[in-house]
Length: 217
Image (cartoon, rainbow, N blue to C red; front, side, top):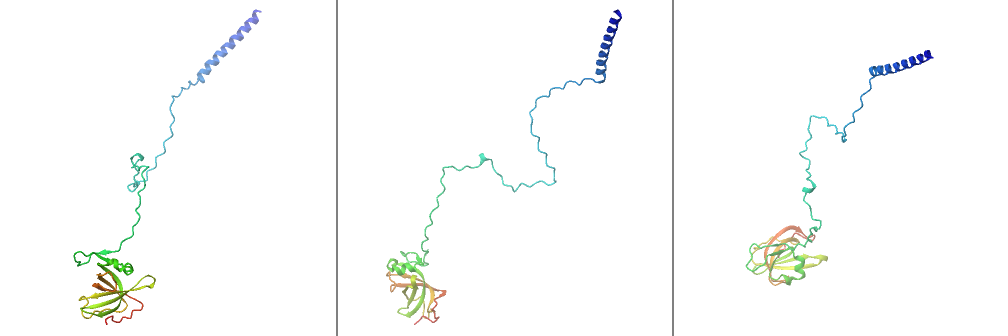
């Protein structure tokens, strides 16, 4: 009995010695890794964009428009009504002051042919200037009596008689059917009498039926 007990004790002792040697050899040749330290908490941020490589030439931004911040820009009132556009008014007849106008006389009225021949009485005492075609220039005392014609809408023909005392001289150069710029004083509000010549000059235009003959009779 003692022999068997001794064998068992020896076996257990050897087994324990083997276990202890195994732990010693393991710690010597295979040391345990130290426990990983807990990383400190840090907030993750997106990685910055890589900087562009220098090209050796800077971009010129001097011509780029500057946009002011929204709060610095002038604001237009929402309730502000848009500015109303004024309706264009019809242009009145061109009026120029006469070079030598007696006191009390009005300015020269130009371009009123149609209105004058429709109602000459409305222009009594006015200085007028019109483009008219020459018909005749008849000798009269103390000067000349001119017969001129105006062709209005619908081919309506109106005649005007203008008297001249000294402006045309003895031998005026007036041609039948040629257009003249005639300035005269309407003394009676009529087209057939009471009109005094103030100025006359050729425009260079002429009627289709113009003969080019002298209008002087």
